[in-house]
Image (cartoon, rainbow over all chains, first blue to last red):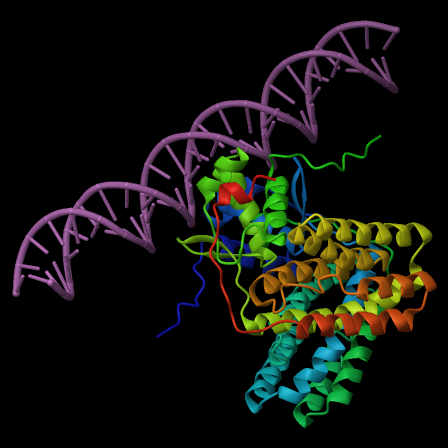
Length: 229
Length: 229
DNA sequence: TACGATGATATTGTATACAACATGAATTGC
DNA sequence: GCAATTCATGTTGTATACAATATCATCGTA
């Protein structure tokens, strides 16, 4: 009756998911080495499953595999950062338009809950988690648009955006919660496709303009500490 | 001095590449079982590397992994087939426009060579290879547009399109080589972005309309035979 | 002291061994 | 004869062992 959709911990998917979450929440930063032995010991699995998880993340360009060197959290170049936003600009405005035409009351409720969670995380001093939830908001919109393929692409792009923000975020202090998500919610609730498309377009441009594309790589605390969650 | 970009055969990438090529050229058809032992024996590598290659292909949705059952060449549903074309319609016309603004003489020459190869393959009775080259044409345009991220997405979509064609192609006899690629080449050579975008849009619609989305799965010849190349 | 060579250590790349599961055939009971 | 169960076989899931490569410290020499 439970559809068996639950994820078994301790398997490849589980490790990949936990690593990805840690990266999304900026607990492990771009450039960090992900040693197979170390990760395996932390999660209590063998190198075999760790390797599979790392290859999966590498395919999403969250980590970079260097032959005979190992896996590292990816460090998108300024150019790659630009490309990510150009791809998002290509996909997300039109997707938001579709979502506006399809959103049900349940969808709106779920989006509202996302925004609430995001605020709560910020209030509790967990900016990493807030950022992660902010990304989920975009993915949820793609899901509402009922286009799994495009939603998959957007998921990848949101992930990489998290890396870009870790590297190039300019004004760290404030404005993390723009009003854009509220505006998107309003557009979707009204079923206003034009508005949804425009708001999304502007939102992405705002995000891009809040970056400073001169690299700033930071040091890294211990992996074991970061992967506790 | 050679940049080390060459691909070592007998490694994960090599196996993945050869399997992908066989799928693209319709030598192995949707639904075919890809047994780890069998593939490993054919390519002379252990299950370890075969598994890695299969996971890579699974991430591109060229194969489907069923837990404890194994890997099978993916069989996109009619709905997934639609989604692939919708995603392509979202990405490729605008990408073609960008390509038109950037194409150099060398780019044009390369595209022309692609078309020639495609014709040659058709003339030599290798429709599978012609189809593969036809896909490369689209990927090459994305590459000219100088957007690696989007080009990666398009590569995935072209791959899946090959599966869709294997399953749902209506008129098998003729028209494989439409004039669309010539028209695209002309638009790019003139640097006419509007025309490139329009032609690409129409080309994709033509492709979609040439499908019959009532499934027709066919049997499969021996793997060993198909993977000789 | 600076530079290069050499060897020890550690990590990844690959193959293999064992365990868990699925599949299908043979057998037994009705 | 038919159905259900059991067991034999084969395939995948995971862990481990070994080989190849990179890294880094030590030593020697100019």
